[in-house]
Image 1 (cartoon, rainbow, N blue to C red):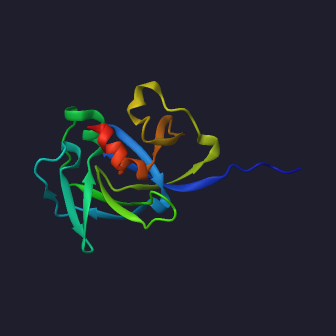
Image 2: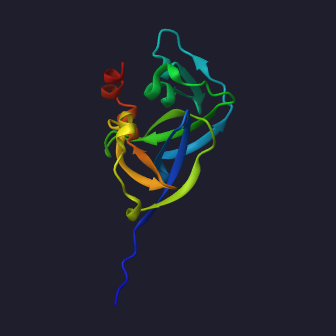
Image 3: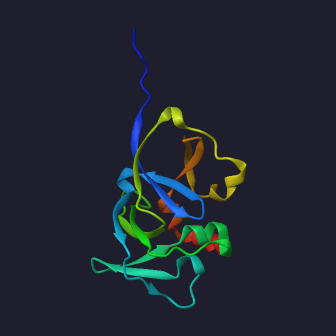
Length: 158
């Protein structure tokens, strides 16, 4: 008699502040920087107004809470920035970008039996969510980082 075992994968639980929590695959969060030096870029959208210089690269830093919940957000003090990695296509090079976080990401395991639908009250995640899972009775979207940082998404977000 064989017992079916739910497949599980490692992921990072990301807290963006303002009650916004999502996840990315374990391989998609490269590093975490505590209180990095950020530079403001004038005349840019409020959710992507900062960059950081990291390993001779200028990386955009997105503030998802501002993007998804607009001006109703409470600014994050003592920022944590997660350096995310993604590819638009497997044949293209890896790209890097920053995400403002309220706390250090939490390493978690997610199994197939945790899959759930994204609740209607979280429909702002719809364009970004690859799927969703339940953790502690809360629906957690899994973000499509390549789409989040794509030109297509950012044109539509403005």
